[in-house]
Length: 207
Image (cartoon, rainbow, N blue to C red; front, side, top):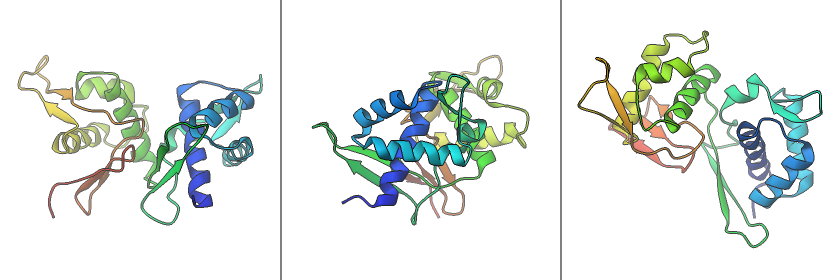
């Protein structure tokens, strides 16, 4: 049986991901899509939307559609509920069981910037650091070049990227080897690990 908090967290994540991919949906449209995708009840989807509206992760357009706020987009991941991560598995309408990762709460500033870097990588096979910075920077980041460079090195070390031997216009160029989902893999500095919230994998590079 699924823990109630894990179940609700799964729906929170489903709501935010669905609205990230679709700019503005009515409550009924959102409910219908998530009932099909997650196999969850309409009541729980409505409750999740009301909760997210209350904490200002969502807002409504003039037409009444639900939209992610800047706060909702920057959050990237939902707070953890009692342990490092949870997987909720739900079966709906005879469809295969869906495993959904609820991941650790991260620093909002680091999470939002690295989330934008990660999503920029997802639409490019090859890129330079400057390609990523040109779309990820919003002006309020601290040392974005150093932050992005460090994150790229972590992803290279963990097998997500490969540094190419030939430079582009004098700048290092990288090849994307894999992109596992919408949430950015999270560096755990103290334990020298990278946690991927999309599939639950942990990559370690020594003590």
